[in-house]
Image (cartoon, rainbow, N blue to C red; front, side, top):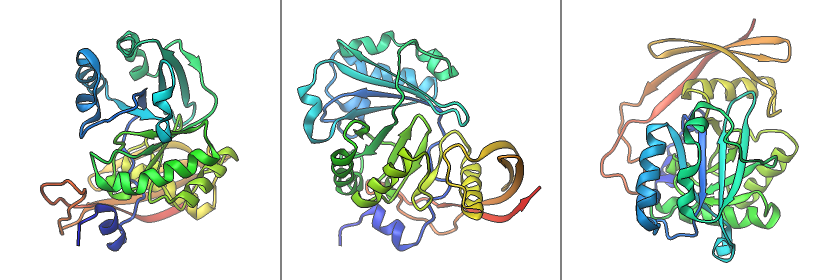
Length: 297
């Protein structure tokens, strides 16, 4: 049987809580593809634009990804749509513009983006729902991501984009919601549409939430556990207050309205090694976040 990392993750009942990439600044650049294995270096961009952009964004700790409209629509549009998002947990921001030429991406103030400042682009009030469909990077992303992107595009055409690699291939189909930095996993077309409907209502889908990218992974797991414990589903219903880390233990404090809660998480790596992606050449341990206590303060 052909190995599929997403199926293997499901079979070992691996928790998704606390598995979102840790990043606040995102840059999404429209490119119809093909993307190759490493989108920014392998995609057919002129004059070495991709490798230079990859180097700049990596140095600034910006998550850069290529995006396109499902169904090949990006091949039929003029200009290059760009989104710049800063996933601040209390004041997320999303800006956009259309470039006449891809080379103009280097005129963007990426230092400002990395620092959480405005770039001076057009404010974008609607969310971006980016579905990873990067099949050359991982087969599961194509097999599971493309049906989700197509299904979302039927119901939410303005918000939906296909995206290159976002991280966590084994949780495909993966979705990133910007500017909030919410990572969702193991979505199918129907559950993805449900997630998007909740998003429009200002709520999170706790059944598929991997975490909020602004937080360390243990804090992501703590927030999800607290939301489930209190049944708090509002996007802005939980406010991070502080965390204290002592080796494998994280004590995170959150506020819901005028009440604070403490969540204790113990993070460990599994002794058993697993193949975590379809293309992985070696096996690795799996990080596990165990919530040991939740209490009201």
